[in-house]
Length: 119
Image 1 (cartoon, rainbow, N blue to C red):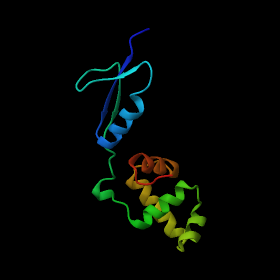
Image 2 (cartoon, rainbow, N blue to C red):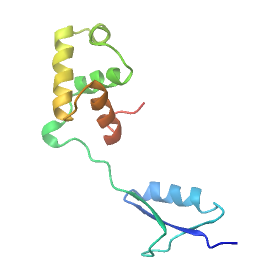
Image 3 (tube, rainbow, N blue to C red):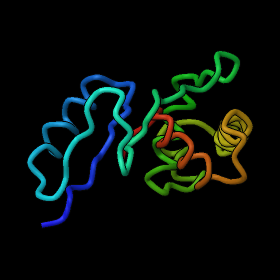
Image 4 (cartoon, one colour):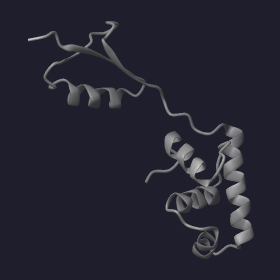
Protein backbone atom coordinates (compact mmCIF):
# COMPACT_ATOMS: atom_id res chain seq x y z
CA UNK A 1 0.00 0.00 0.00
CA UNK A 2 1.29 3.47 -0.85
CA UNK A 3 1.87 6.28 1.63
CA UNK A 4 -1.26 8.28 2.48
CA UNK A 5 -1.72 11.77 1.10
CA UNK A 6 -1.04 14.28 3.86
CA UNK A 7 -3.68 17.01 3.95
CA UNK A 8 -3.02 20.26 5.80
CA UNK A 9 -6.07 22.27 6.83
CA UNK A 10 -5.59 26.01 7.35
CA UNK A 11 -8.97 27.54 7.98
CA UNK A 12 -9.59 30.71 10.02
CA UNK A 13 -13.02 29.57 11.19
CA UNK A 14 -12.44 27.01 13.99
CA UNK A 15 -15.92 25.51 13.63
CA UNK A 16 -15.39 24.92 9.92
CA UNK A 17 -11.92 23.50 10.61
CA UNK A 18 -13.40 21.05 13.14
CA UNK A 19 -16.12 20.01 10.70
CA UNK A 20 -13.58 19.43 7.93
CA UNK A 21 -11.37 17.45 10.27
CA UNK A 22 -14.29 15.26 11.34
CA UNK A 23 -15.37 14.59 7.75
CA UNK A 24 -11.88 13.96 6.37
CA UNK A 25 -10.33 12.02 9.24
CA UNK A 26 -11.85 8.72 8.15
CA UNK A 27 -11.04 8.93 4.43
CA UNK A 28 -8.88 5.97 3.34
CA UNK A 29 -5.52 6.93 1.87
CA UNK A 30 -5.62 10.34 3.53
CA UNK A 31 -3.88 11.54 6.69
CA UNK A 32 -4.45 14.94 8.22
CA UNK A 33 -1.26 16.92 8.84
CA UNK A 34 -0.19 17.61 12.39
CA UNK A 35 0.08 21.23 13.60
CA UNK A 36 2.72 23.10 11.54
CA UNK A 37 3.38 20.01 9.38
CA UNK A 38 3.62 20.68 5.66
CA UNK A 39 1.10 18.58 3.80
CA UNK A 40 1.11 17.20 0.26
CA UNK A 41 -2.11 19.18 -0.25
CA UNK A 42 -3.60 22.07 1.72
CA UNK A 43 -7.11 23.34 2.24
CA UNK A 44 -6.78 27.06 2.90
CA UNK A 45 -9.59 29.44 3.69
CA UNK A 46 -9.64 32.87 5.25
CA UNK A 47 -12.57 34.73 6.77
CA UNK A 48 -15.08 36.03 4.27
CA UNK A 49 -14.69 39.73 3.75
CA UNK A 50 -17.82 41.81 4.00
CA UNK A 51 -18.16 44.84 1.77
CA UNK A 52 -16.14 47.76 3.10
CA UNK A 53 -17.91 50.07 5.51
CA UNK A 54 -18.28 52.67 2.74
CA UNK A 55 -19.96 50.03 0.64
CA UNK A 56 -22.30 48.69 3.33
CA UNK A 57 -25.59 47.61 1.82
CA UNK A 58 -28.90 49.08 2.83
CA UNK A 59 -31.76 46.76 3.78
CA UNK A 60 -33.49 47.66 0.48
CA UNK A 61 -30.34 46.85 -1.52
CA UNK A 62 -30.19 43.44 0.16
CA UNK A 63 -33.85 42.85 -0.82
CA UNK A 64 -33.10 43.85 -4.42
CA UNK A 65 -29.98 41.67 -4.42
CA UNK A 66 -31.94 38.67 -3.15
CA UNK A 67 -34.49 39.11 -5.91
CA UNK A 68 -31.70 39.51 -8.48
CA UNK A 69 -30.33 36.18 -7.25
CA UNK A 70 -33.74 34.64 -8.02
CA UNK A 71 -33.44 35.99 -11.58
CA UNK A 72 -36.18 38.59 -11.20
CA UNK A 73 -36.41 41.40 -13.75
CA UNK A 74 -36.45 45.07 -12.75
CA UNK A 75 -40.18 45.19 -13.42
CA UNK A 76 -40.79 42.11 -11.27
CA UNK A 77 -38.62 43.47 -8.45
CA UNK A 78 -40.50 46.78 -8.59
CA UNK A 79 -43.86 45.02 -8.30
CA UNK A 80 -42.74 42.74 -5.48
CA UNK A 81 -41.23 45.58 -3.44
CA UNK A 82 -43.87 48.18 -4.28
CA UNK A 83 -41.37 50.62 -5.77
CA UNK A 84 -40.86 52.10 -9.24
CA UNK A 85 -38.75 50.48 -11.95
CA UNK A 86 -36.62 53.65 -11.89
CA UNK A 87 -35.90 53.09 -8.19
CA UNK A 88 -34.99 49.46 -8.87
CA UNK A 89 -32.55 50.61 -11.58
CA UNK A 90 -31.03 53.02 -9.05
CA UNK A 91 -30.55 50.19 -6.51
CA UNK A 92 -29.08 47.84 -9.13
CA UNK A 93 -26.63 50.55 -10.25
CA UNK A 94 -25.64 51.12 -6.63
CA UNK A 95 -25.08 47.38 -6.12
CA UNK A 96 -22.94 47.16 -9.26
CA UNK A 97 -20.86 50.06 -7.98
CA UNK A 98 -20.47 48.71 -4.45
CA UNK A 99 -19.42 45.25 -5.66
CA UNK A 100 -17.42 46.66 -8.56
CA UNK A 101 -19.42 44.24 -10.69
CA UNK A 102 -19.75 44.23 -14.46
CA UNK A 103 -23.37 43.12 -14.44
CA UNK A 104 -26.25 41.77 -12.40
CA UNK A 105 -24.97 38.20 -12.40
CA UNK A 106 -21.51 39.36 -11.35
CA UNK A 107 -23.01 41.35 -8.46
CA UNK A 108 -24.92 38.28 -7.27
CA UNK A 109 -21.75 36.14 -7.57
CA UNK A 110 -19.78 38.65 -5.47
CA UNK A 111 -22.55 38.77 -2.86
CA UNK A 112 -22.64 34.97 -2.63
CA UNK A 113 -18.84 34.73 -2.26
CA UNK A 114 -18.90 37.37 0.48
CA UNK A 115 -21.78 35.72 2.29
CA UNK A 116 -24.05 38.75 1.91
CA UNK A 117 -26.84 36.53 0.55
CA UNK A 118 -27.47 32.79 0.39
CA UNK A 119 -29.36 30.75 -2.15
